[in-house]
Image 1 (tube, helix red, strand yellow):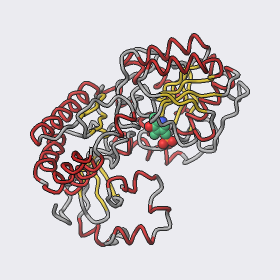
Image 2 (cartoon, rainbow, N blue to C red; image 1 turned 135 degrees about the vertical axis):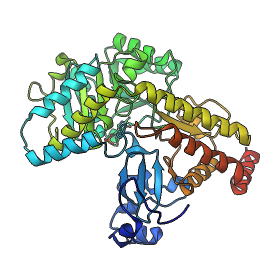
Image 3 (cartoon, protein in one colour; image 1 turned 90 degrees about the vertical axis):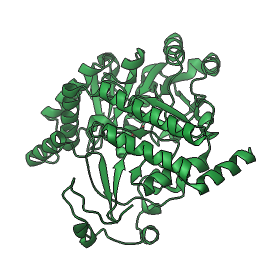
Image 4 (tube, rainbow, N blue to C red; image 1 turned 90 degrees about the horizontal axis):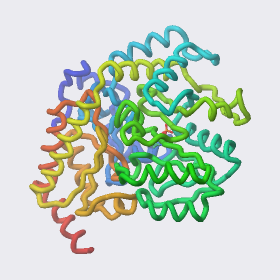
Length: 436
Ligand SMILES: *Cc1c(COP(=O)(O)O)cnc(C)c1O
């Protein structure tokens, strides 16, 4: 791709970028010299899984992102999920500016928090009340502590490859294969009475996208009811992503507790727990489970979240996103066919993952059997072609309302080229196939 193009969309010229403080030519040098561990603050940003270097972002708008070397990328990482409306949607930017003029932090309750909680409760029938947190990790941990208090039990049942923040090492965990109803039911027979909560991504997004088998979520609902455990849906990714009422609305299964995050913060840091009044009454100050935070319900995050959720309610983008997701998935599948390279596209609405394997991917182990060398080569080829997708097959690619059919087609065309045109990629694939 051409370096230092003039970027009309964001109004910044390469000459300006080149003069900016971020124009350090050598990415490798940047990492070595960095005062950040590994040059990043979240491991996946290092791009190590695909043998590439981090992208140093300087600015973004709509469907595009610019790096420190002046490259423009079509962004399909989209902040790893929060940016359903794309980068810097005007309504959100305006709301944050307005909120900032009123005060950056009150340390007191404020009106917009009530409004965000109401928008969430109106959209998701299982939620009557909400507690806001600063991150999804914090919300997951608090939901689990709440379940432990309500049930008087310690253990937590979760699914291999599921992600509920980085605090799970603190917990007594029973781990079961995602989508394996028999294994789950056996685990419940063995451990059910000591399980405080079953926590699940109702559509998995952190082993790559994996859809729930039709019998899976109903089985979780039925067995937790029988054994007196709470069912927690971690909808940090799926909430307001796979439909207006999240995965629980899409699949018609109602959890006891819902964890939210990402989209509800409109691009700023947030998390939330939602449930019935009765259950949430166990949280302080009403109850005995302490949760609080200096930044909980931060005015800027809340303002951004309210603006985002209002806009989603007004424009109802989900049908259009479904069509866009379908267009992308079909395009990618066709590209695989055309190149004679086996691949699976797992998709739910506007999030999807490509697995380079001929077999369906229904759990984390299936995903691990896919061809990682081929995946890495594909990600690098797309990046060279100016398209950013997550550099790990355990992550989801996200479409936003800022994406158009033309954007999606560009990703597909780049994939056709990547899969057919690059001899190195094909040779690596052939070697990997022989090795198996
Ligand atoms: C991102 C994510 C979290 C953690 O949220 P943070 O805001 O990053 O702490 C928890 N659960 C799921 C399913 C997630 O995708």
